[in-house]
Image 1 (cartoon, rainbow, N blue to C red):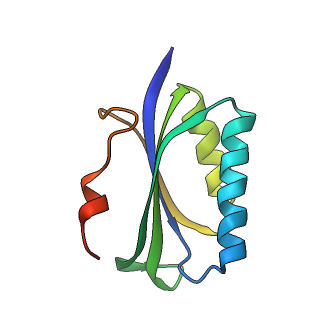
Image 2 (cartoon, rainbow, N blue to C red; image 1 turned 90 degrees about the vertical axis):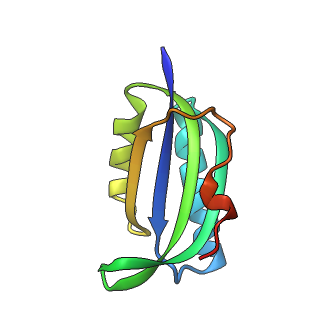
Length: 109
């Protein structure tokens, strides 16, 4: 049985375009290797952090919602933990529809 999950990833704000593309490619590749399709993605841009993370006071926020089996979030957790470009991430089970937009998309920084 599959569930809808969502993850928010805080990425280093100073990544070059090539590094950001490589990060997105590696995440997309990880999803495809595990036969999980991403139903919805948003880029929330660079935002100020309440407290510093690894000496960064800002972070680039990425959001995605996907349909997966219950064992996939643990695999994704392991994958993101060892990615040096990710400052923090959160994976949760979603109560929203797969392709529903988030209120954050319409907010200003």
